[in-house]
Image (cartoon, rainbow over all chains, first blue to last red; front, side):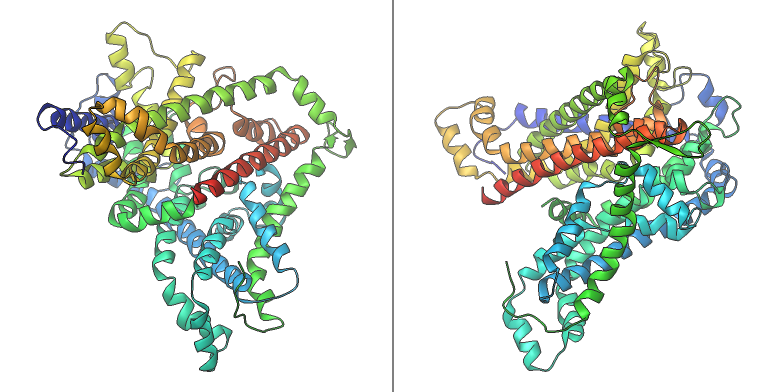
Length: 281
Length: 293
């Protein structure tokens, strides 16, 4: 990129060497987890563990998926998927609607509503964890998908993002639609939604990762193992005194828990970067 | 910031904001109000009724050695996570910015840890540093260094910092790389013609021009270390040994759910609400400046 500035030769090698070293450091924990998921417990309990994969990949992954810990991992993965999709789709829908109302309508309490939504930025769930748990318990939502999803779908960030986007859409478009006799709902569905397509997709990638990686919330409200998500379920598998689950199975579960969000990031890299940069503005 | 063309409808806008507002009220404002209310009471030992104590819970908290220590622990933890995650990421971004061929391949290999959940990052690092079987604990033993983070508070802190920083490097890397690529190459080339060395160019031109990105990441990393690292702490150390890794967010949880001390936990929630408020205001003031920059 800075062709005329940099010297060729040694500098270039040092640059690549440094990057490869950095990548090796960052990838090392994953490599170790992968290797551990392909060997037997005996290979792991007598250090040093092997550094190259063994022949037990299929056994360990099948054992994790079908037996797992308190619940089979396929069930945890399914719960994670439902929660992640529920949070993502829920956040996008209610944020699109509220941003549309705030930008395209004049009504009493408009600014008050806007600030109320904005204030939730300051209230991460970790901070108000005990009273939020009590509210959800009082509503009878423990051990349910609704309880996993609903408390996490309010989104100041997404509302902001869509508001910003709608502000940039030229008024002439709205005018033309109105002249053509389109009402507010027609305008929203036929014009606004198609124009927001890439932003929705970028947000989808970010929110899916957010939803999939939730830990504390499912840990508290799913006491029934069949409702556990994989990110919190793996904690229950860790050895505590009377060990039941073996390390290769735990590591196979860790690999399975990482796979969906990592694939989303790698497969939709452009959208991911766009979403990340925009959701921080 | 107002639209010239708006729709006229009496009830539709209320219907549109209703879902967002409803969720916000039930799961944000109601619990936050409950936290403020409960922070003024202590339940009696049998949990039958509560006694009003005003600011008693706060007085108790600040008189409590463990709570004051938790502030210090949080500060040490956040500074270590922020500094290590940002400096390693900046170093990688500077290198990646110099690469002409294959920079997108490097980027791909560096960004994906962002997708790994903090709790999973905790499990991976715990496995490598398991005092009896972990590969790195074993390597350290070969070098004559005994690793046992379940006994040694300093080692426990180092481990949760490493796991938390590892996860955040990708994020910082992406923003630093974007910041570096936005700096006009002509400025740097002019300095090079004047004979400035690479490091001189970096410290006198590149780093100052990068400062908006650096400040922004500083705030984001501190917020991350404060609130998003719960999973790392809970899987690796559970706040121990002897509370040496009990950061504030972990203490709210352990006092409320494990210790069942609801008044104190509520008071801690209120203090944290204040802290998030301050951080959010800082972030916004700063971002406003960034937009005008």
